[in-house]
Image 1: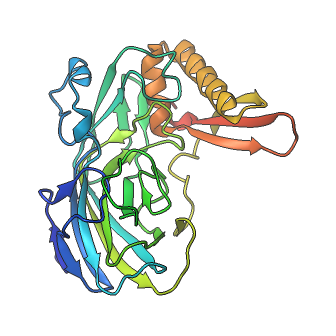
Image 2 (image 1 turned 180 degrees about the vertical axis):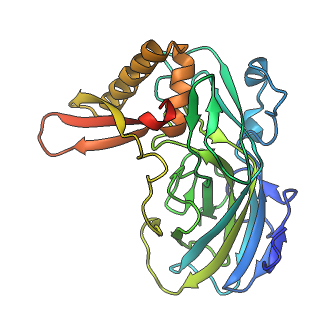
Length: 314
């Protein structure tokens, strides 16, 4: 446990989806330092003993539980909740899955697949993928947000103005995130922790991994923030840059189709070069490859690039 934290929010205090009528797990003053025990996105349905058959048995009503909510005293609509991401305490276990019907190339990869990961939670040394691959790790919380003003239950799957399932891999230790507050107390929750993810999370999952998160919650009064914003502590890709990148592109009038083409070509490249099953290559690139918009002004065609770090195999 966190010796210098004001509160610990145990994993039993979780909920599915967003609802501003949920009772808070804790009420805290601005400036509180809190350790959250977070579940993985399967809510514990997938374990180190799981097999591919367990993908079909997933209860999607139990997907993406988040720990909380936390009522921050004095938070009012129009304020911003300032979240300083202090530390992650990883578990050493993770999983990546191809879930039929989900992911950027769902029409091409229609069968379930599962990769299980074991990594050193203390050193965070690159995690082994197959015989030759090693994926650099960078823990972060995929789902982090506050309650929306609209009453009722809202799915945790789509991201929102108030945060939620953002899946921004740079929300790592040292980052400061600002979220617009829509209800009194903000009602903050966090979960869906990852050991690593590429920008885009293209197969729909990253290295999904339960872990504890230490955050400091504070307020910026009357910030009138329109959307989430954040500040990073320093370089964000140093863990991937050492050997350079293989890059594929998609060029055309539709950004989504360009993204699909860039990813599909990278999957084909890696599967052929490293003798990987294509679905394994697809899951691998989701954990460490980055989608980027390279050009969006030279109409009628735009350029999307997919960067895969060469350090994974070198």
